[in-house]
Length: 278
Image (cartoon, rainbow, N blue to C red; front, side, top):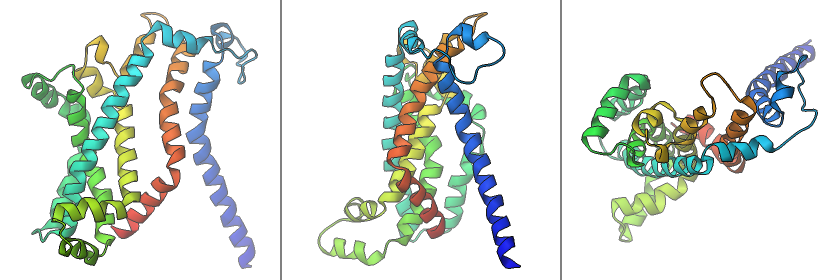
């Protein structure tokens, strides 16, 4: 009696997993296939799911119609800069919450996480006015600083759980040997919390790489456009060259896909362990 129920339950689980995988991978696969088609084939009926004559001309045109390499470089600088600064600041905040005898530290953590509930569009005007007053518009800093602030809640939340799981005796031993508290943090706690650091770093990088609204508003200069903003320039007033746009989208997706593929185990382990330990 139990065996059929277990088998049936396993079947539902597999079906749900298949739906999630299909929902996640089908759009990316469709974009890839579209990037290999010609305009004529894309407009033909009935719809062809697999390109009859795959071509890489769309990728060549994507790099020649717009300075796609420049957009890639801008996105890389901004995303890496925001990730590094986010990790540095969130590590200090998480360590203070996890280790120092702060009054109402749970309330402090709750307030930090709650600050992320505000829609980005409601913060756009204050951020823009602040960056304009500081003379930072059309610079990498104009995006790195806001991205850091936006990444801090999730990075801090992830790191707090890991820092709390590390025995205090290890830090005490390091400080007895001559380390300061900050030295113990960077030399003992952070290396032991490597899965959490990787998880927080990848989440911060992906958020900064994909962000569009601030990148469009704060860096209007052609030389400072990031990849999400640059891709919107491929469309004309009355035309949408979907194969070329799809090729540019594939170029944008590849770095993130490679990053996730390389650090998949660390990210999954970091999310699950951080959730359990926090």
